[in-house]
Image (cartoon, rainbow, N blue to C red; front, side):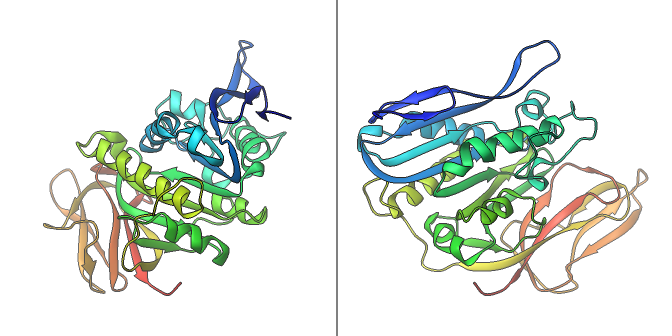
Length: 324
């Protein structure tokens, strides 16, 4: 065979192709598809899958995959790059975290690898894993803080066989988030069951409304280029940090609804002491109804920036130092 094929998309060596992998039909008869970008190298090498926007309001990853599709030269590539700029297409259309067309709105990054006979979100997740991720030697899943949070550069990994990939992201990605904080249904969890090394990258958020959106996209692109250099898909030496900080991460919720107010000077990558106050929740009259304090010495890795908060929603992401 003189070409690489994924669904209806055929790619000759040394070229890049674009197309769609079908999932299911809509009520009007049109098709829900997964958009794919495939750069097929002229020499053998690993297959890297980079997916984005399984949460429909996380757009940094989408722009990153589009950039990579434009910038990767398949004539200089060893192996195959497969980019999916938007996984959860219905959620993306509605600018929401989850797909509103499900009977029950599901978080896609809790139900991987999906089900072929499930709700629409489960079928999309199944197609992504069955038709695309199953071909991968390496998987990178791109995330951000969505419409409500901002995150610093975080490389999330679960298993020891993903640590090499996690460190290869390099550059400013020097915080490694270890563990399965959100259970076994994440992309990392599902990839682990297939024996595929994988990481999730977190950076940015708040719907891309901040001026540093393009800077964050640059960091994503740089990190993935580091991975491709490390695994000899591209020529060059990856840019790696001198040391890494490994943390176990927990998101801490509010227990009262209201307006969230960070402590003055609170910033990402700041170390806070156990018991230190980091945020308040106030009511409509300015009265403090809740204090949020660090439960341990912790690194501030993400925080809520959307001021309105309901009981049970995330307020802050704190990382506790651990070992690899």
